[in-house]
Image: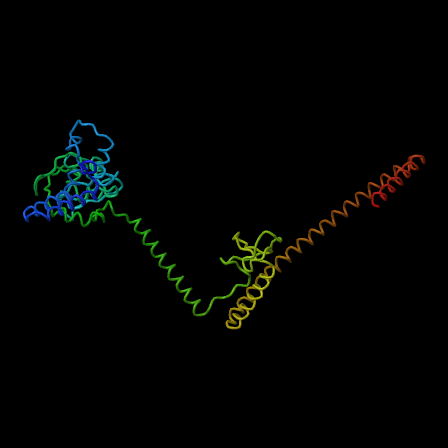
Length: 395
């Protein structure tokens, strides 16, 4: 009765088995053996038998199931969820009607007669075109192996598409290509030759791309050349040492430039608040005035030590400086000459304007002399007033 109420309790099964064995010890040997067998049955068999309390009636078709039946089913399954991907494909017979094939730009090119024959575009095989084979290949197996299943597991693809496949080796199948219709045998020898070369195109002319190969080889040579140049540069720097920079740089090798004092920024060297220098390329790197001076002094010392070890580098740098100065001097002379010519032109224009003004004033003076004295007196008064006003404005 207790086991019927609690069928899944292991402790009760163990207790019942122990009580039966203890009671059997006071009986004859045959009764003891029977009691031990009954106790072991309770211990190991009762949980299994107790899984279906109703005798399996709930599992019959058409019977209603409650939440307890569903929980019992989940215990049996173990809580495993079914995968959302397609199911596994059926086993392949490892036979093929082609000696080779290649996938090129959404088309399938095959070798029908031998491994050394030319490839031709496939229209249908066994009445199925490439679209039918591709759709059938997607219904089973991993999603990224659609072409592989068509090339190596063609029998499984035909089974998934519901098409008729050969029943034994060397049976004939119909193939339609651009060159015509052929009846070819299906065997394992073709499958072995095709499975080895289909990933590389099986030497089909359609799969060969000379322009692409040339571009790839060019990129390879460029990459190798750059790698060799960088390795040679690094090895030379290790042997001779790297030339120090003239300017103070940030951690990424960019030049530091002076900016307005910023109180909110923090120096990346001494962690002091307030900086006057920052990276010229917008890196988040700032320096205070003291750290910049110390870095500048150290850069000059390192450069001087480098010049002492390598005087030829110093001579080259001096020559470059001279050339830059000469270029700047020529440009400044040209600007000066342009300025002189401009000044001369301006002086000439001013002289012409003064001459015109004098001639106009002479004419006006002649006209004024002909006027009566009253008018001249009025003009003199007006000029005196204007002059006084000008003086006041200047003050």
